[in-house]
Every structure is written in structure tokens, then in C-alpha cells.
Image 1: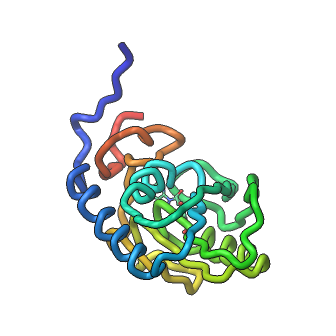
Image 2 (image 1 turned 90 degrees about the horizontal axis):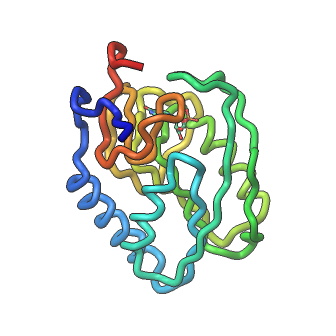
Length: 181
Ligand code: IMP
């Protein structure tokens, strides 16, 4: 059996802490929607576990759609240029849209996506980010719902990767420079 050396990783948020916070976010989103329908737009791939969990705490009539962006770079830092590599399947005009993202970091990705999605004239466009790193922001953008605000740390797990690995860790862990590749 292939194993990943998880034991030496420092846990930042446990699966229980994540579940509790996600449930609070879902309750807040439910209240804000006042019974209206919702389109949840996940940003692939990192937001997939968060979207799956959040969706099950949101008590409204919801559908899913997904977009994917690429930021020209695979390591710890992106190069800045964002492009769309997978568009929405369905039009969102007149709909309540919730963009679901794993981390709001520099803001380049969400600023780009927000501009693109607003061109379709949704009824409302809100953003849910599980993690927020405000000190890294380049674009002026805030999420409407934030799970945890964190300092400038590189995290992995619960959807978040380092070079495509570690997305399946159930906890959010710290990626330390000396961790074995
Ligand atoms: P932004 O465009 O700089 O806000 O970056 C957003 C994307 O960068 C996130 O959706 C993640 O894919 C990636 N990212 C930023 N910080 C981290 C991190 O600490 N761990 C893993 N991925 C990250």
C-alpha cells in the first residue's frame, strides 16, 4: 500500500474544527438567501472538498457548477497571470451565485473570476473562501464568507495542494520547507 508521510506534518485545523466552521458558514449562507435558489460555483480543483461539505450544510435548493483557472505556475507561488481553463456549464444570468474557493491569497484568481461572472449579470454574486490570507492581497477583494483568516503560511490538505499532492488530507496542515518531497 502506498502511504504519504503525513505524520510529520503540523496540523493547523483539524477535520473537526473545519466541519464546525463550515457548518457555521452554511447556516449564515442559508440565512442570507432567505429561501431563494443558489448556484454554487466551485473553483477546481482545490475547492472540491469544501464545496461538497459546504453544500450539505446549506439548507436551500442548490445546484453545482465548476470553473477552473490556471495561474501559470505549479510551486508555492503563482506568476500572477490568470486564465480560464474551464468555463461554467450553465448560464447564471438572474441567479444567486456563490463562488466557492479554497483560499483567498493574492486575490488575483477571484478578482478575475468575479469580473468574468459579473458580465453574465447574476442576481447576486457572493464569495465563500475557506481560508483567507489578507496579508498577501494584491487585488482589492474580500470574501463574503470566510472560514479562517490566517497569516502568510503555505497550507496543504482538505483540497489544497503542493504540486498536486496532499489534496486528500482530511486536516489542513502546514507545508514546511523541509518536508520530504
Ligand atoms: P490567489 O489568486 O493568489 O488568491 O490564489 C488563489 C489560489 O492559489 C488558491 O485557490 C490556491 O489554489 C492557491 N494557493 C494560495 N495559497 C495557497 C496555499 O497556502 N496552499 C495551497 N494553495 C494555495
